[in-house]
Length: 226
Image (cartoon, one colour):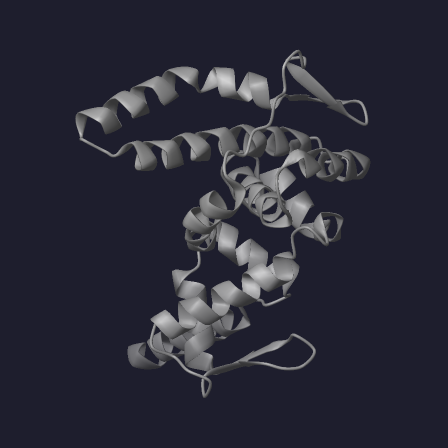
Protein backbone atom coordinates (compact mmCIF):
# COMPACT_ATOMS: atom_id res chain seq x y z
CA UNK A 1 0.00 0.00 0.00
CA UNK A 2 3.02 2.27 -0.05
CA UNK A 3 2.22 3.28 -3.65
CA UNK A 4 -0.58 5.54 -2.49
CA UNK A 5 1.81 7.56 -0.32
CA UNK A 6 4.35 7.85 -3.12
CA UNK A 7 1.67 9.09 -5.51
CA UNK A 8 1.23 12.20 -3.38
CA UNK A 9 4.87 13.18 -3.59
CA UNK A 10 4.79 15.80 -6.33
CA UNK A 11 1.44 17.14 -5.17
CA UNK A 12 2.76 17.53 -1.66
CA UNK A 13 5.83 19.42 -2.79
CA UNK A 14 3.92 21.79 -5.04
CA UNK A 15 1.25 22.54 -2.46
CA UNK A 16 3.32 22.58 0.69
CA UNK A 17 6.73 23.93 -0.21
CA UNK A 18 9.28 23.33 2.52
CA UNK A 19 7.51 21.36 5.22
CA UNK A 20 9.63 22.29 8.21
CA UNK A 21 9.08 25.66 9.85
CA UNK A 22 11.47 27.60 12.06
CA UNK A 23 11.93 25.36 15.10
CA UNK A 24 14.96 27.04 16.68
CA UNK A 25 15.67 26.31 20.31
CA UNK A 26 13.30 23.35 20.57
CA UNK A 27 14.56 20.43 22.70
CA UNK A 28 15.77 17.12 21.31
CA UNK A 29 12.67 15.42 22.68
CA UNK A 30 9.01 16.36 22.58
CA UNK A 31 6.57 15.15 25.22
CA UNK A 32 3.10 13.92 24.27
CA UNK A 33 1.06 13.28 27.40
CA UNK A 34 4.21 12.13 29.17
CA UNK A 35 5.50 10.12 26.19
CA UNK A 36 8.97 11.24 25.11
CA UNK A 37 9.58 11.22 21.37
CA UNK A 38 12.41 12.49 19.23
CA UNK A 39 11.74 16.02 18.03
CA UNK A 40 11.88 16.68 14.28
CA UNK A 41 15.22 18.40 14.89
CA UNK A 42 16.64 15.29 16.58
CA UNK A 43 15.32 13.04 13.83
CA UNK A 44 16.84 15.35 11.24
CA UNK A 45 20.19 15.17 13.02
CA UNK A 46 20.07 11.38 12.99
CA UNK A 47 19.68 11.34 9.21
CA UNK A 48 22.12 14.20 8.56
CA UNK A 49 24.87 11.91 7.28
CA UNK A 50 22.48 10.15 4.93
CA UNK A 51 21.24 13.52 3.69
CA UNK A 52 24.77 14.63 2.83
CA UNK A 53 25.45 11.37 1.00
CA UNK A 54 22.21 11.57 -0.96
CA UNK A 55 22.78 15.16 -2.06
CA UNK A 56 26.35 14.34 -3.11
CA UNK A 57 25.08 11.35 -5.08
CA UNK A 58 22.41 13.44 -6.81
CA UNK A 59 24.97 16.09 -7.72
CA UNK A 60 27.28 13.43 -9.15
CA UNK A 61 24.40 12.14 -11.26
CA UNK A 62 23.74 15.62 -12.61
CA UNK A 63 20.35 15.94 -10.90
CA UNK A 64 18.80 19.40 -11.21
CA UNK A 65 18.60 21.83 -8.30
CA UNK A 66 14.80 21.50 -8.36
CA UNK A 67 14.91 17.71 -8.08
CA UNK A 68 17.51 17.91 -5.30
CA UNK A 69 15.16 20.28 -3.50
CA UNK A 70 12.36 17.73 -3.73
CA UNK A 71 14.61 15.04 -2.23
CA UNK A 72 15.53 17.38 0.63
CA UNK A 73 11.87 18.10 1.36
CA UNK A 74 11.20 14.36 1.50
CA UNK A 75 14.01 13.97 4.04
CA UNK A 76 12.56 16.81 6.11
CA UNK A 77 9.16 15.11 5.99
CA UNK A 78 10.80 11.96 7.32
CA UNK A 79 11.69 13.76 10.56
CA UNK A 80 8.00 14.21 11.33
CA UNK A 81 7.25 10.62 10.30
CA UNK A 82 9.91 9.35 12.71
CA UNK A 83 8.42 11.42 15.50
CA UNK A 84 4.94 10.02 14.77
CA UNK A 85 6.32 6.46 14.83
CA UNK A 86 7.88 7.07 18.25
CA UNK A 87 4.55 8.27 19.63
CA UNK A 88 2.53 5.41 18.09
CA UNK A 89 4.88 2.83 19.58
CA UNK A 90 3.91 4.02 23.07
CA UNK A 91 0.32 2.81 22.43
CA UNK A 92 -1.17 5.74 24.35
CA UNK A 93 -4.47 7.18 23.03
CA UNK A 94 -3.96 10.60 24.62
CA UNK A 95 -0.49 10.80 23.11
CA UNK A 96 -1.94 10.15 19.64
CA UNK A 97 -4.34 13.06 20.09
CA UNK A 98 -1.47 15.28 21.26
CA UNK A 99 0.59 14.16 18.25
CA UNK A 100 -2.14 15.20 15.83
CA UNK A 101 -2.35 18.59 17.50
CA UNK A 102 1.41 18.97 17.18
CA UNK A 103 1.35 18.07 13.49
CA UNK A 104 -0.78 21.14 12.77
CA UNK A 105 2.59 22.89 12.30
CA UNK A 106 2.59 21.20 8.89
CA UNK A 107 1.30 23.42 6.09
CA UNK A 108 -1.97 21.67 5.21
CA UNK A 109 -4.23 18.67 6.02
CA UNK A 110 -2.75 16.61 3.19
CA UNK A 111 0.71 16.86 4.73
CA UNK A 112 -0.68 15.67 8.08
CA UNK A 113 -2.53 12.77 6.43
CA UNK A 114 0.55 11.60 4.54
CA UNK A 115 2.76 11.89 7.62
CA UNK A 116 0.41 9.72 9.69
CA UNK A 117 -0.03 7.20 6.87
CA UNK A 118 3.69 6.81 6.34
CA UNK A 119 4.16 6.41 10.09
CA UNK A 120 1.61 3.58 10.21
CA UNK A 121 3.39 1.76 7.38
CA UNK A 122 6.78 2.17 9.03
CA UNK A 123 5.30 0.91 12.28
CA UNK A 124 4.34 -2.31 10.51
CA UNK A 125 8.00 -2.94 9.70
CA UNK A 126 9.53 -2.20 13.10
CA UNK A 127 6.93 -2.92 15.80
CA UNK A 128 4.20 -5.41 14.91
CA UNK A 129 2.54 -5.19 18.33
CA UNK A 130 2.22 -1.41 18.11
CA UNK A 131 1.04 -1.72 14.50
CA UNK A 132 -1.78 -4.07 15.49
CA UNK A 133 -2.72 -1.75 18.35
CA UNK A 134 -2.82 1.24 16.00
CA UNK A 135 -5.08 -0.60 13.56
CA UNK A 136 -7.43 -1.56 16.38
CA UNK A 137 -7.45 2.08 17.52
CA UNK A 138 -7.65 3.56 14.03
CA UNK A 139 -10.48 5.90 15.08
CA UNK A 140 -7.84 7.88 16.96
CA UNK A 141 -6.34 8.90 13.61
CA UNK A 142 -9.63 10.36 12.36
CA UNK A 143 -10.41 12.70 10.72
CA UNK A 144 -6.82 13.41 9.69
CA UNK A 145 -6.30 9.86 8.36
CA UNK A 146 -9.13 7.54 7.35
CA UNK A 147 -7.58 4.08 7.14
CA UNK A 148 -10.84 2.59 5.86
CA UNK A 149 -10.63 4.84 2.83
CA UNK A 150 -6.95 3.98 2.38
CA UNK A 151 -7.70 0.24 2.36
CA UNK A 152 -10.67 0.61 0.00
CA UNK A 153 -8.55 2.53 -2.49
CA UNK A 154 -5.83 -0.11 -2.25
CA UNK A 155 -8.31 -2.94 -2.89
CA UNK A 156 -9.72 -1.22 -5.97
CA UNK A 157 -6.33 -0.37 -7.46
CA UNK A 158 -4.87 -3.80 -6.69
CA UNK A 159 -7.70 -5.85 -8.16
CA UNK A 160 -8.01 -3.56 -11.18
CA UNK A 161 -4.29 -3.97 -11.80
CA UNK A 162 -4.74 -7.75 -11.55
CA UNK A 163 -7.38 -7.65 -14.30
CA UNK A 164 -10.58 -7.77 -12.24
CA UNK A 165 -13.53 -5.40 -12.68
CA UNK A 166 -16.88 -4.50 -11.11
CA UNK A 167 -18.19 -7.97 -11.93
CA UNK A 168 -15.63 -9.44 -9.52
CA UNK A 169 -15.75 -6.97 -6.64
CA UNK A 170 -18.02 -4.22 -5.42
CA UNK A 171 -18.35 -1.90 -2.43
CA UNK A 172 -21.91 -1.31 -1.21
CA UNK A 173 -23.30 1.90 0.25
CA UNK A 174 -22.34 0.73 3.74
CA UNK A 175 -18.70 0.45 2.70
CA UNK A 176 -18.65 -3.36 2.70
CA UNK A 177 -16.83 -5.18 -0.09
CA UNK A 178 -18.24 -8.17 -1.93
CA UNK A 179 -15.89 -10.35 -3.97
CA UNK A 180 -16.00 -13.22 -6.37
CA UNK A 181 -14.05 -16.19 -5.01
CA UNK A 182 -11.33 -15.67 -7.60
CA UNK A 183 -10.92 -11.95 -6.82
CA UNK A 184 -10.77 -12.51 -3.09
CA UNK A 185 -8.27 -15.32 -3.45
CA UNK A 186 -6.05 -13.19 -5.66
CA UNK A 187 -6.29 -10.24 -3.27
CA UNK A 188 -5.07 -12.44 -0.45
CA UNK A 189 -2.26 -13.84 -2.56
CA UNK A 190 -0.79 -10.43 -3.46
CA UNK A 191 -1.28 -8.90 0.00
CA UNK A 192 1.69 -8.73 2.34
CA UNK A 193 1.34 -9.79 5.97
CA UNK A 194 0.87 -6.15 6.95
CA UNK A 195 -1.72 -5.64 4.20
CA UNK A 196 -3.64 -8.66 5.46
CA UNK A 197 -3.76 -7.19 8.95
CA UNK A 198 -5.17 -4.00 7.46
CA UNK A 199 -7.82 -5.98 5.60
CA UNK A 200 -8.78 -7.92 8.74
CA UNK A 201 -8.65 -5.13 11.31
CA UNK A 202 -9.96 -2.20 9.28
CA UNK A 203 -12.51 -3.74 6.88
CA UNK A 204 -12.94 -7.12 8.62
CA UNK A 205 -12.12 -9.01 5.44
CA UNK A 206 -10.85 -12.45 6.39
CA UNK A 207 -9.08 -15.21 4.47
CA UNK A 208 -12.05 -17.60 4.60
CA UNK A 209 -11.69 -18.35 0.90
CA UNK A 210 -8.09 -19.43 1.44
CA UNK A 211 -9.08 -21.77 4.25
CA UNK A 212 -11.89 -23.28 2.17
CA UNK A 213 -9.52 -23.79 -0.75
CA UNK A 214 -7.07 -25.49 1.56
CA UNK A 215 -9.77 -27.88 2.72
CA UNK A 216 -10.87 -28.55 -0.87
CA UNK A 217 -7.27 -29.11 -1.95
CA UNK A 218 -6.67 -31.49 0.93
CA UNK A 219 -9.86 -33.39 0.07
CA UNK A 220 -8.79 -33.57 -3.56
CA UNK A 221 -5.38 -34.91 -2.61
CA UNK A 222 -6.97 -37.60 -0.46
CA UNK A 223 -9.32 -38.56 -3.29
CA UNK A 224 -6.38 -38.82 -5.66
CA UNK A 225 -4.65 -41.17 -3.24
CA UNK A 226 -7.64 -43.51 -3.40
